Image (tube, rainbow, N blue to C red):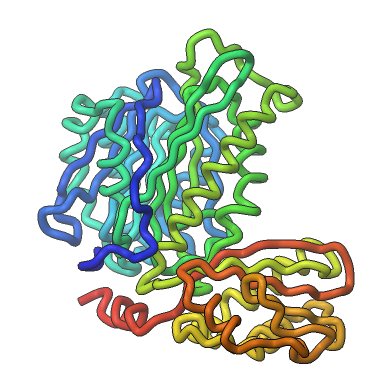
Length: 410
């Protein structure tokens, strides 16, 4: 965890009420950091339904493999998360440590290993000594409380400078249900599915197959539309659990019209968490929303937006408060998507800096620079070819990013 909190951190944190059906506890097991909670256990006293999306990395961590194997069962009784070590690229030892952890968790709460889900975050390539925390799981299983969301968010942090929490309510079948979520992530963020780690729990009664379709659709415009540094983690895990503990709410099906409010609340919560991750980008001082309109289709718009958002030259210009729109042109041109130089228009905030493929005749350097001095900078690009549209969020690239990542292991 960095010494100073990101200047883009929330001024206040959401009050996190309990969600019925889930208890949590944390411990300091000394996995990497001393005197800091680094193990989180979530316990579902009654079986919860579960959905998940994971990294598309071809070098996934051992816990990601473990979760993928258990997900088709659709039932969760426990989640164990550790920070400080990703248990990735750890070979046979990695598989053994996930097995040891799952066995300890299953024994602690009296369930099958197939009903346990695991996640690890931190250094890649270091063997994870599961004996450090498998011994604390008995205590965590019995000590868990419902009112522990903020502490849970703290326990899964690595280089994060603040815990990420969000909560929403929705109407489902005439009953008010709650959705709570936590996330961690600051660097190695170009999720291509989710963030580093995020866990969302609702007390609604929703079958696993319906939960999965909601989650798979929800990540596209949220977690899959943020990037800090264009690097996709080996460990990306986003899981959604439904405890079914909301009183009086009947189980819903996939074609239930009453799901609309829940879907909207879930997507809003996912977007909230995803933007908190960007706002904690390592060394970040500014957040940039890149909107591309007029592309061939939505997919093309998103690829162009990501090309802009991931460009080190664009991101360093933002860090230097330099309205260098030539770098936007560069990033559009290299995206591989259809673009017509002579139809291109670019805005920084409300200031149009380029139009019809050249500098705007009314261009004001002072007006553009004023936008670049803001903490939140909207960049909009009109391609002029179709109806495709997408927004991607990123942050600037500062000297602090290099410093944080230059000595991450030391």
